[in-house]
Image (cartoon, rainbow, N blue to C red; front, side, top):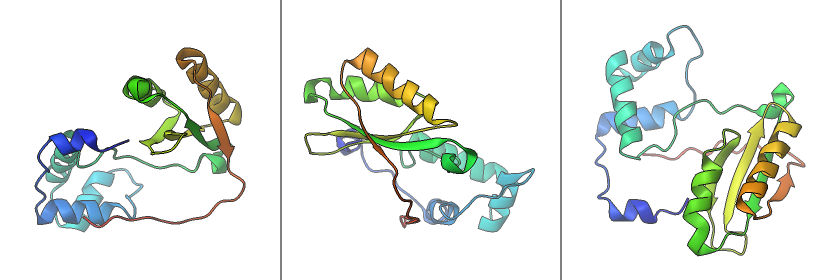
Length: 160
């Protein structure tokens, strides 16, 4: 999404611990019975402090999302990149609706005729298609589908 909303708010102040959390958790999160406790220990923190800081970073919109990123294809599902052309006057309303659909992630704005881009992900290609069809039916705007032809692993990490 466009960052105009953030430009109106003062930038959040990150201390050294916040930066350590953001940088440290981009490369993985423990998969175990008490993942926050293990992650906190790896970061030199207490579990409660890690959870509280993550919550604050989400509330302050420093983080827009904290959670697992699944490769739906490996589970027999599908990920489909999609784009829409939405008039600027209607953009925020449509973006809010699209973002409410559980199959949609990574919605962002581009300065292009196709100005709204997002990924549909679900446990089956049919469920992704059903979500796209529902969005088209409710919004009245077509969705252009760009199904994956080949996968590349980029592993983008942003240093805080």
